[in-house]
Length: 185
Length: 185
DNA sequence: TGCAAAAGCGGAGAGTGTCTCCGTATAGTC
DNA sequence: GACTATACGGAGACACTCTCCGCTTTTGCA
Image (cartoon, rainbow over all chains, first blue to last red; front, side, top):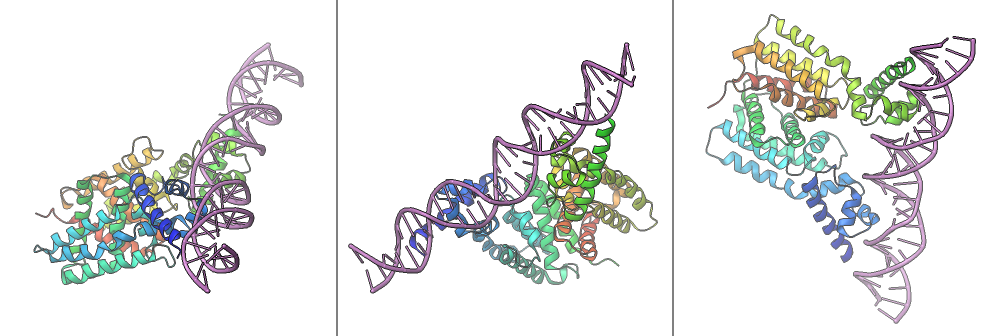
């Protein structure tokens, strides 16, 4: 890759990240990204063929933090319920860091060929690790995909409605208790 | 209202309902609705000033069925858990009848002035009735708004990812057990 | 029945998005 | 310094929501 191309690519991602964080995915147009970055639309689209592809690059960095969060939450010296709740809160917080991301990523779960596929895998594996770590304390039929979807749903609602942390926590507590419940007859 | 206007209005809603049910809200353009109904765009927009307003009219009919569903589920002669689960399933089924509706309605919860405001009120009251009916069996801190959001989140994910009924049921079981759990210390 | 006013109709087009095409400019190479 | 692959920029194609306004139809009334 040519030096100017590399420079432009980095600048695009940086500008897009700031804009999306400030205004939300939907409210940022590709034109605005290009203008703010001081480049032409053609250049932008060569680097990122779709708006989703750009979005994917923007959220790349914090997808890496997911596994750290799993480790931290699971190593806490507290009951399983608290560890699970901590993880769900961390996970929700990460998903809602960028406006509009939660719904898009959650909708891509299990969809082959989506631009967010790699991230979905990361998240699924992270939730699987949580399930493994908490072992028999969870309901026996819980699945990583299910957990991703349920928490993703909460995150999407929280993001969309800009809910205060207490409201999100309260919803996650319901989920937590649901995950911990034994399978009913 | 003039006779031709009434005729056109009814036809628009009918056409829009069929199209949205078949292709999903996002995939149906206002132009397509107008063309299919055999009218001009101006006529369409006189009757429904925005696409959301049209959508609201389309889902009008089944919003009325919500209260029936509450009655039916609460009158069942089964344990509280099964009644709650039945209600959540019915509610989810209604929300996902029209593609794209669940996410839009859930996002409008608590937003003053949204075109879906009346429906949100209906849903909130319905969930409140369920909470009242199940009385002390639910966790003490449960709220109708919270229930609406949690189930709406599940419905939105189910709708987006076109999940099979078993997967939706499994997620609702987690929610059910969460709602039934006593408040943890 | 005939007429005027009110009500409604239709479609061109404004405004805004995503994304494409292609002539032009420039970084890297010998 | 020249040559070529690579990258750039921006006009514009296409799709969508929504507006404006001249024209047509319905309706109430004599």
